Image (cartoon, rainbow, N blue to C red; front, side, top):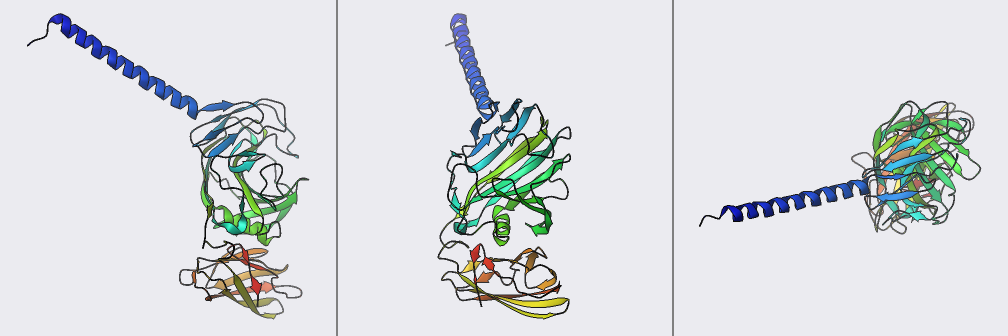
Length: 374
């Protein structure tokens, strides 16, 4: 039966109304999602969360001038950055996002603070978008403390400077160079009056990187600025502007802290002994290093951290990959010797130059756990 013109018009009218309602619903949902994803914060210490796991914070503390940031679904950007401070002092702010706890503000679902000896790996990634009409550094922070504190200033701050524009520099003074995470860095060390600061400055701008936070934590331990019994409390990334800063952005960020029974560095699962047999002469030395797994569980993939005495520099090695050639050094396994069964051993060798009285390194740590010496 063919419908009457009136009933056909009515059906078309109902269909049109239904489609219009659906369009309104889609528009409402879309606008709601966008409003949730892009949140502007101008309060000095205002914050919000993204991805249900990271905190984005404005963190303006060095000036009373307005600073606004916009949190996106993957990071944040600075939308207004008024005012300036002298470049020979502290920055005016640290807009950033973080995993962990910062002045009692803890990110959702975080497993920080976590004792360093309980962490096997802490993979992270970061990507930045830069501007040139500002004075700033692109900063990445790792905070360590003897206690699992969630408030106040931690004892040691590890910083990366992925980029800097203008005549600004890290806290302290340069203490040498190091290769960490497969990259070369200029290393600075100092104290800002509240905490120790160990900084790694990239020789040229880095826009993005994937790495293991624990590689840098082990550097702090080997330099005496932290201990394996201490806690990792927060992992942060953002910018430290001195002048202007609008347009700077963190376009992506991820941070995971892996813990668990049997992981390298877990208390009770890893124990080790190191024999450091040397042959030295005026101006040089060789060393045969033997690592013994004295624990009850296997170690899959090892990194041995130690500090060479002053005046010594490694010029060659075998059966290990080295990060650093003087000062703090980390030796890691090669493809054929990465598995250490309980009671098993791995051996590698070093050759280097030396000046003054020759001495051996005083301490070693395997995957973050202190070793005894033979």
